[in-house]
Length: 370
Image (tube, helix red, strand yellow):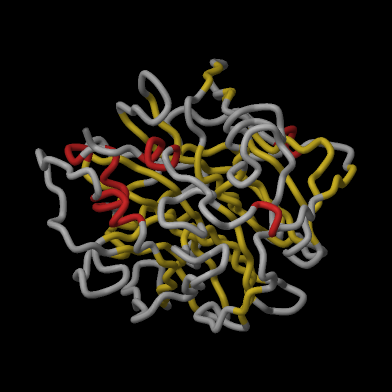
């Protein structure tokens, strides 16, 4: 049987790195209104989907042509959903409105050869505009086995071998239509012997409008079999680096009854002109009260974060603009389209199928905000 993302994560253990090595640095921040109250009904048929492809995580920006440009993941459905770690490519889709539907335009970051750190896979994009240039963050990976095709018999260790080579890259272009210039080396490398010893992945960059610096939140793990999946933060004067860690330790620690090392993931960070804000996935529901729901937090420096009160940012229960309501099994990779520091639309990867991670199809959906 092909190894799934969930079974791969479940079988891993903390190893020798002690939990007590990391401080608890979160506190409550009282606010009058929950972020979730900003959510409006989602448009049926909005977002981005393609019939023959799995579609995943999105990042959207308004271009100088007045159109909205989405960068997203896709890979052929006939490879199987696990092909995200071996076959994904970042693609470009366009819409006249933020809600979509988005229409496929081109492959932004294609395969370029196994000799490159990102040569066989590009995934989880984040797009920003900085000093006249577009920068496309992503993770890339490569591996030393044949690229899976339709009907390929997966080997038990393929997922882990591809997963362990994940590194953050930053491509750049003067145009959202490309061409995209690709780096020779990752933007930020793992650190042997540290909490982020194995991979760097799932970048969330944000420009600080006060300092002009780039804050980059990322995910990693201290051991060779995935969890604990932890979040760190770095800073640079320019999107291409050099990135400096702002903390030697992970930045989120939760005292929860399940597994405090693996409670949140996939943050999206923005700056409102006064401070940083983020939303991220609550994996087990111990923080916001819903498994797979979202939490909201704020920070002055990007290192010490305060949970909002109310903390809930979004739910897997979706209200649609035709009056229907659905409980989505998955609501992943949350992304906010922001204009002038204000979020206007929430995007997320979702899917339909008999149970979580057993999809019949996937797409990127969108929810307008008040």
